[in-house]
Image 1: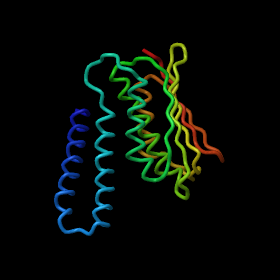
Image 2: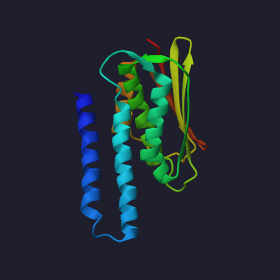
Image 3: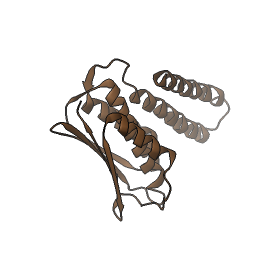
Image 4: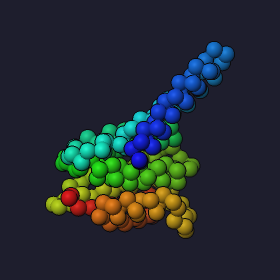
Length: 191
């Protein structure tokens, strides 16, 4: 069901982008066409991000390194580059079942989205680091940024969703914030 929803959403974005381009190109100034093209590119980037999250229904092993690197490129194009934030990715080689990669991808996407939304309100020199490291019988994923620490006292829906996803992975979660940004660590077993 979730895959079908993602598929429908990605197709909707593609259709919206195409309609937007077709409806607006004939009567706009060149400056406005450039603005429309930038927004169209962003819509396409969000469609690509949704496609990157879903890697298939089969429980076959896939390269976690390739998956995370592709996902982070999509996250960067859709969320980070438009606000002037860089994304740096390091991922160890290894395989995970596709279903577990999807869960990990959803966790990473939510953590990066939180950084994009909250960490860089007054600057455009930010960096989000994503590190996925294989440690004996576990994977450790760290998503960190050099942004500002917000004054959030309540847990949002995203934090609760991340907790549920990590629970499905059989993992644990820790988050620290300080004057040099925020870092979230997710650890989960390889199997």
